[in-house]
Length: 180
Image 1 (tube, rainbow, N blue to C red):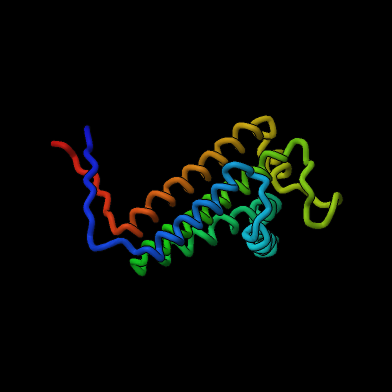
Image 2: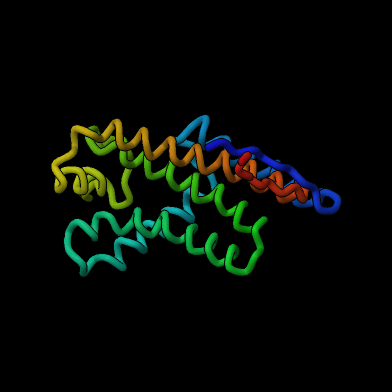
């Protein structure tokens, strides 16, 4: 099966949105280049992550350890879904950047499961979430590959966010049509 991409413009570009897209691309590209980048969203994501642990603390050890990541990835997704439901697609596409950055952030934390060298909230006496998760699932040996896949998903989401938000700001629609 073969597809052809059709581009069509509806109206003139929104230059304010284009500026927002360029700023988002510059900001979030920093996380692709340096996954350890410490930016404003790091603090926001940390608060959301820790709230996930509080929410899941009564649901067993595995969900308690996973709760931070579950919240960290689901909160941006919920906002994206909300804006899609409201048909405010530009806002949803901009929030995709945040979701992608969260995947990169999770990949960094995940990749530290074996060495456990990242500074954790609470100091050296706290449990490392991903060490606990991977140990529980008996897949600690897969840490590198799983963190690489997670990082790649984050990069992919950020690239998709850049393309979609740029097209939205230019008021260009992409349509995939079957050639047959």
